[in-house]
Image 1 (cartoon, rainbow, N blue to C red):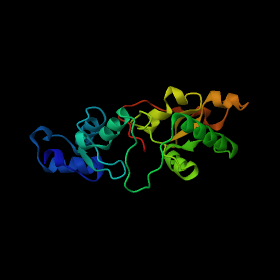
Image 2 (cartoon, rainbow, N blue to C red):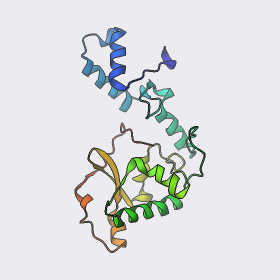
Image 3 (cartoon, rainbow, N blue to C red):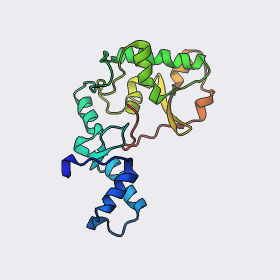
Image 4 (cartoon, one colour):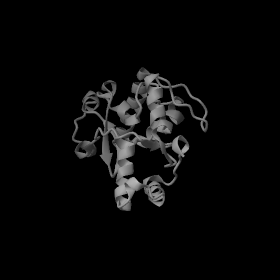
Amino acid sequence: QGFAMEMHGGRYACAKILMDLDLPFLRGFSLGRVCHIIQLAICQKKILGYLKYSTGAIVPYQRSALLLKITCADNRCPMSSTDQPRLPSATWETARTHMREILVNAIRDGTHHVTLSNLKPTFRSVYQVELSETALGHAKLSELLTDFRFQDLCEVRMLNRSYVVTPAERLLNSLGMDDSLPFSSLGSFPDHSGHSDPG
């Protein structure tokens, strides 16, 4: 099917489809090995990609959501959305201001972190702006939050197999606090090019 190819169900279902096609170059490989090959094709080789992160449908990279995001990031424009009303995109100044307020509130309520996947909904519902990583020149939300312009405010870490945003040491110091908080021992965000983050 070439460019129009679309395989639903994620890597496992995609691997089963490819094995059922009895492709010569996959003969003799186990299902697990084909799943790994598909993972490499998505994360490293950029041969395949996800049509939408929420659906799990795998398509040729040229049709993938990641390539669209990279193109939008290169042009500093927000991703268009058909299922939500259009909101103005946050600027660097407003993104920093709102992020600081969100993190300070997280410290005050005792959670000390914000789930990465909840950031965009919070920006929409509380501040009526879109936290668009592509409008600010990044293809992934996690990359945006590790930009040097956020380094004094936040860090992206792993907590219970989910990514969370925690206050940076400089923010804590500005609030008269130290870094001996519950998140201080959490793992740092690994900068893997194949990581598919929400948003």
